[in-house]
Image 1 (cartoon, rainbow, N blue to C red):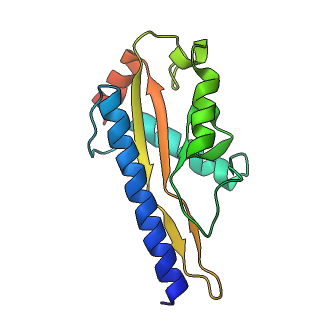
Image 2 (image 1 turned 30 degrees about the vertical axis):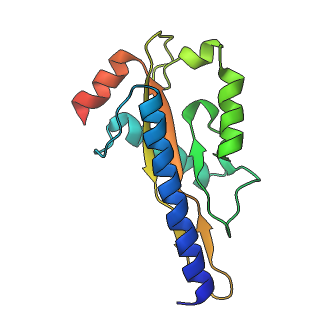
Length: 157
């Protein structure tokens, strides 16, 4: 393995760790819990939606993300057109703050006062392509569920 690929692997590893730390911080700040568990059927549905969107070109990447400099990235069903860098995702969150969308379940679309924030972390991928290694960033898939959908997801998992 060449030095460029090794350097990209190190950057990808650092991006994954930074993303996981952001998950921990967010969980702590919102009173939630952080842990490792098998994704429930709702998470699997959103992961399939992300996968299909990337492969059909209906989900793109924020222009700030680079295949040669991996950094944490984010995707949410309520802003599903792009995988975003941290700053662009923060701006997307600001746009829905204090709007009805901020209290809408990402699965059933019901309005709710109590929202359960959930997430799934996808790892970075490094491709050792001759001449120029490339990477896909780690992607934090985040979504909010109303209490009945959260219960459904936990029961089925």
